[in-house]
Image (tube, rainbow, N blue to C red; front, side, top):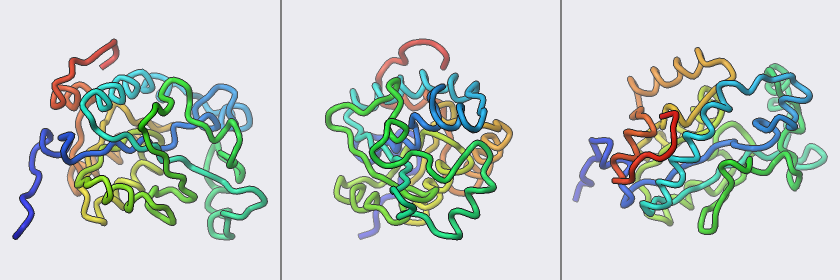
Length: 221
């Protein structure tokens, strides 16, 4: 028997079908004392503005019974997770380095504003996509999920890579547009425009919270 398609935002983010993927919300990228800011001189403006909205969304997800999965960029010590191809690509990435989010360090941990809570899950990744070399698909299938809701940084790199791979693995994809951000927001906008016209649903935090029948809390939506 054919599976009934999920066609509306309400169906795609339904607690019956959906899991939230929280991508790369880590100290080395987002904290003022992290490596991106201290070593790369990265300005945190657009991302700092996004964090409270994401925190609201995660509270609403938990209240609605939607699983929350943190997808954490990870670098293994002594170059164990690196290759010449990866290192060459990273050398061209602005505000980055070869030892970002080193396993077991403070820099790898999630920022306190959106820190995991009991019952949340974590998956470590070693490339841009949360599906490459990880057990993320196994976790989602084991939870009976058909749909993922993507939030995090940066929209046009790790969030997009994970979202596209989710689609290629036959998951429905939704972006919470204002719970994602990029260092260059023109790239954020371009990634979302492509997603919306090709493979994903794009919605705001408020629109998603309304589907869960949880009133939007706080300001900035």
